Amino acid sequence: MERLIKRFLEYVSVETTSSFESKTFPSTNTQLELAKILRAEMESIGLKEVVLDDYGYVMGTLPSNIESDVPVIGFIAHMDTSPDMSGKDIKPSIIDYQGGKIPINEEKNIFIDPDLYPEMCDYVGERLIVTDGTTLLGADDKAGVAEIITAMEYLISNPEIKHGKIRIAFTPDEEVGKGTEHFDVEKFGADYAYTVDGGALGELQYETFNAASVEVVVKGLNIHPGSAKGRMKNSLLIACEFNGMLPSNEVPAVTEQREGFFHLGSIKGSVEETVLKYIIRDHSKEKFEKKKKLVVEIAAFLNSKYGEDTIAFNMKDSYCNMKEKIEEEMIVVEIAKRAMESLSIEPRIEPVRGGTDGARLSFMRLPTPNIFTGGHNFHGRYEYIPTSSMDKAVKVIVKIAELFSREENWRSRKSTL
Image 1 (spheres, helix red, strand yellow):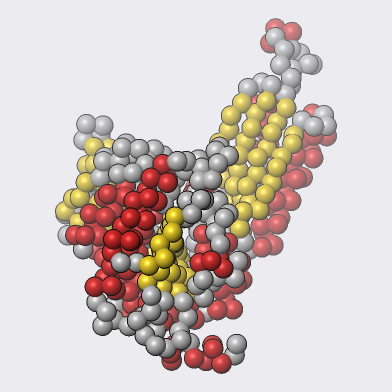
Image 2 (spheres, rainbow, N blue to C red):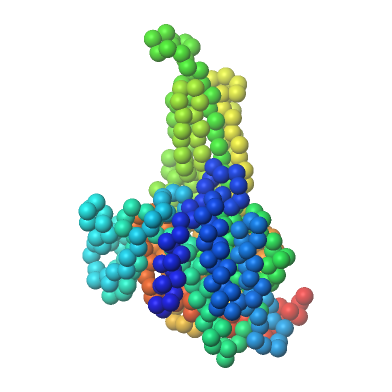
């Protein structure tokens, strides 16, 4: 386990925050720094066909050590961290958690409080990796990266464990919705894959939101407030009116499970112009389409009220619910479930309330459910990860590889092809 933790701490020391505003791919050059480190490490542990391409994808192969013709499986994680909070100069520490609040930064009076995060109580007596409260930790998804590489190293060191061909890939820009934009599924060459990008121990996910992004631009008219009557059109106030017409009970803070939402991610403006950026999410395709239709209707209403071209918007679908595709290939979920159960880990099959590269990959003909990394409270200062959960994630990856090497697990599938 110590090698796993050392890897993870090395990876989080490299800033890889992605950017929504950037027009390049990857969106930030720092991601390429980690990509180069990973390429060198993959070569050093004995992986083959290691490539870092022009888009920043790192791929490699662990060749099969059996003669049987079994499916090629892939394991994928992303290198970038969320722009929601700084990922620069991360100062992680490892604590032996004995219960109660965790003082991650006493100088700034920053604590992780079990009253707010009761799942912490499940880890009393264990080691947790935390930040100093001034940055995120980066377990999303550098924990997944470290777990995949450690699992491959373990398989190389233990050739008695049988497995078919395994492909691994580390992707940039997942956090800004572009992780698969240049991903070459044919080149990757896997029949099935897993993103190692989930949260708490036991998570196994093959159902995601349908997702879209919306940028709303409100045009106003500025004039001196002393003579503004009947002439000023304050885009800030109209933007507030637009947001106020969205359902207040369909926001992230009051929704859970399969309940969808409108999430206002940023607002920036002045009297002359205001820009609102939203994401729209819903597991139900029908409800998702209704949410998008509501945006159109509100814009039309406000244009009729304040004048044509007051409101303009750009709405773009991001990904679809991967359940539609994975239900056709449930063996990939079944084997992950069996792997966890064989290690006395209770599988927690639940919908993803977020994005995953697996959603787009599944629609690119690569069925790709999501499995846990072990982390909690991603994207913020209270992020932490139990070292025991990371170790169990490595074991699950190894066991999945082993189970896929057994012909009885897929022979019936092969006979129908």
